[in-house]
Length: 83
Image (cartoon, rainbow, N blue to C red; front, side):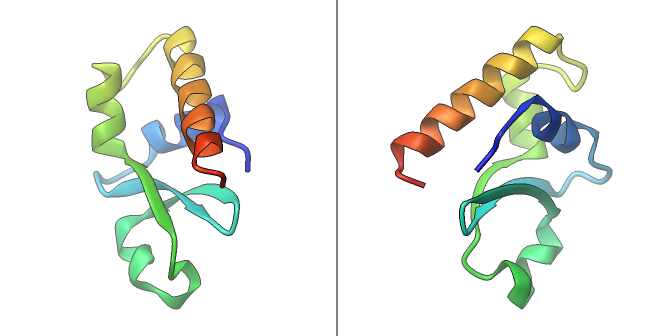
């Protein structure tokens, strides 16, 4: 499971407001919310939506340090869940 700066940026750059960062079988990825209803993503845990990410960062164009800090916080939180 790798939640890195690039993945956080991918979520920020996702078009449409319904993208989410998910964890499925130990792999983190960005998908559209509509995709979560498909069999391919059955059982996925939604970690953060794009809207929640922007709210947490306070902007849709954050400084790189803020992206790095948030990616680290997400890795830490998921690691504590035993994922």
